[in-house]
Length: 181
Ligand code: NI
Image (tube, rainbow, N blue to C red; front, side):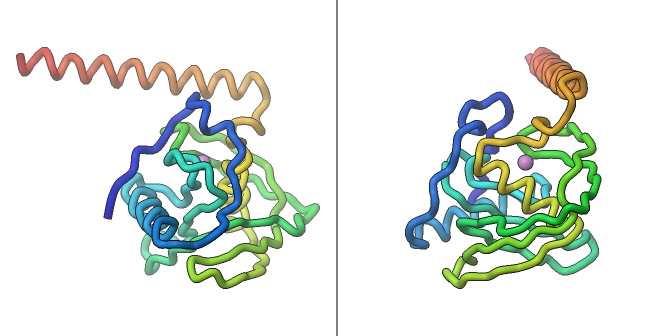
């Protein structure tokens, strides 16, 4: 088990397009395991490979609720085949945009084809929370972040709040340090 560093905005890697996984080998499996551990520890419900510095089209997620048993999903080379006209509003957050949340409107249901970690192909119809997580994470593979869906004003406010929180966090960290000295 290894916990990976999660890249945060405005890291340029988060804006790049990831490449398909050509072969599911030991290295890919190890990366998937480490991504899952990193996601659970964060804690988060989804994590895409570019968020940990790998431009590969794969992601991990767990849409089960807290009191349920864990249901990790490994999604490699996903393709959205269909999206419903009906939409859903969800309050979204992202491990790359820490502690910031905003409502995003997305298709309520989607059909996705992907490979699991054994290389088995699946086509599923996802609804609600799972559909939102899948779309949010697949966006990461194309260099998209949930804040892209917000109005310019809302996006600026959210990023300003993030900047402020980062500054006060580093300020209190240096205060702690001064106390020790
Ligand atoms: Ni995200």
